[in-house]
Length: 246
Ligand code: HEM
Image 1: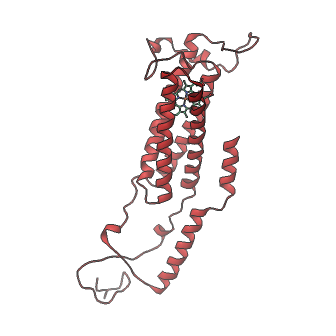
Image 2: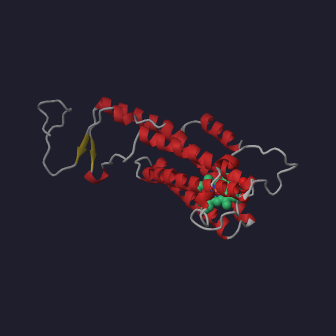
Image 3: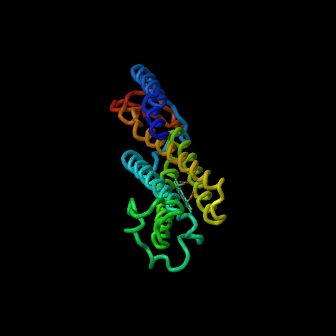
C-alpha cells in the first residue's frame, strides 16, 4: 500500500534530474550555435560506466522483482511460525535437503483447522519455507549487490548516491536477518527486519524510476572536447574542416 503511494508520488512529482539535464542541454545547444570549444584537462575526461543502458535497467528490474518475492517469502515465514525451525547458518541444520517439501510448504490454504494460531504445518514444510527465504536472501544479495556496485561507478552522481543507499540498506537487512536467527527472534530485531525490507523496497523503486527515466542527451549530440596540450594550437575549426590546425 505504502509502496504504491510512494510510487504514485514519484510518478507525479516533477522530474528534477530530467529538468536539470534539459537545462544543461539547452545551454549546450546555445553554446554549440556560437561554436565555443570546451577545453578540459585530461584527468577530468569521464569514462563510460561498465554497465549502461539496457543491462542496468534489466538488473534494476530483476533486483526489484526478487526483493518483492523475498518480502512475500518473509511474510510466509512469519505467518507460518517458521522463524525458529532453522537456527544454524548459513542455510539450516542437519540434512535439511532430504526433508524439503515444497508442495505442503506453499499450499496457500490448509482446510480442517479452526484457526492457524502457532501454525499448522509440520517440521518439513516449515523448514522448506525458512530455507526458501534463506536462498531468496542469497539471490537478492547478488542482484542488489551487483546493481549497487555498478551504480557506484556511474558518472551521474544521483545514481552513485542510490548505489550507496542500496548497498547500505542491503547490509543492514542481512545483519538483521542473521540476528533474527542467532538471537532467536527478539521482537525489536524482527520489527527492524520488517522496516529494513520496506526501506530496501522503496529504494529499489526509486532506483528503477531514475534508471528507467534516464536520458543521455549529450550522447546524441556532437560535442567537441579538446584535451589541453602543450602543442601550440593555431586557429580552431570545426571537425571535418581540412584546414583544422589540430
Ligand atoms: C536480503 C533481503 C531480505 C529481505 C528483503 C527480507 C524480508 C523479510 C520480511 C519482509 C519478513 C517478514 C517479517 C514479518 O512478517 O514480521 C522476513 C522475515 C524473516 N526473515 Fe528475512 N529478509 C531478508 C533476508 C533475511 C536473511 C538473510 C535472514 C536470515 C539469515 C532472514 C531471516 C528472516 C526470519 C527468521 C524471518 C521471520 C521473522 C518473524 O517471524 O517475524 N531474512 N524477512
